[in-house]
Length: 403
Image 1 (cartoon, one colour):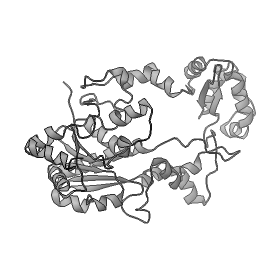
Image 2 (cartoon, rainbow, N blue to C red):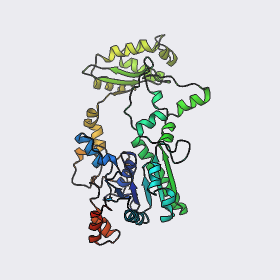
Image 3 (cartoon, helix red, strand yellow):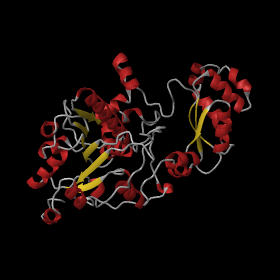
Image 4 (cartoon, rainbow, N blue to C red):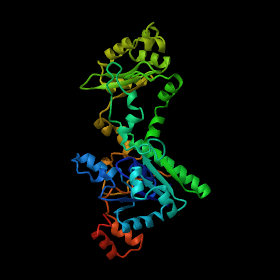
């Protein structure tokens, strides 16, 4: 029997794409009853996009992000009747999650000021580009674009050319986990005081908090951090090196002189530890080009797994640079990813692309249900939850109230 730490907590969500659905998945996997409210009129363009997608992307958007929900219902909030239905549902909720643009929240009357009168002790969480207050509160954007506004992209590039190293990283899943943390803190506060509150989560604020060292450098010295490529301010060597094989690479990071000596032993060249060019961190940083050439000469002669195993055995932080396919098939990743309880018999463990990232020994949670098409639970939900006659539910569907 699986114990769920959030059993008894009811969550209503209007969320889209990744951040909000990720937040609710964190709660749902741990047992919260999550009611997902959607609309084909635009609640989640990730679910209803007409853009051609790969089978994997379609699978993720349908199944991963909105998984473990207890109910998938559809309501057209643009109708008065639909809005009244939604308000009745929210009156029964402990938590309301909303990650649509602040202007859309105002238009649909979904702000905290509109929601709180329905249940004064409700915890409401919003996720927006720049938060609900401040000069940029009306900023509209997605994770990668907010990376640019928050300064993250300015730190990632090659010093020789200034070229951006990667524009792929999307902060949405980080936002989802951060939002779940905020919601749980608010629930904890409500249990102690009986008071609900608004959790206002800002992409901009979370991202600037992740580059605190660079912000501090600018605050203290008034200078912008220089692009470093793979170089590191307190580690040398620190980089990615080609290994033997087709597009094979390994990463190596050395922080202490002791680790440097371990690397030299792995190279079977202990004399390098006291080489006047590399004896201390400052010397290794100063002579970084010569150091990289030396490591590259060694690494190119060895398969990546062999090189990593040898370096690790000598206390050096080293890892193979994996492709997405390598990571998915990696025995350790597969073990951790699939070693969870799955209560939905429509999926096998080898199909799981994302497990539960934390391990609780007594209340581990479970993947309780795969994502479902929107509105699939309408009849069951509205007849059992709100006590509506099935004939009325069918009538509302015909009149696009449930769309």
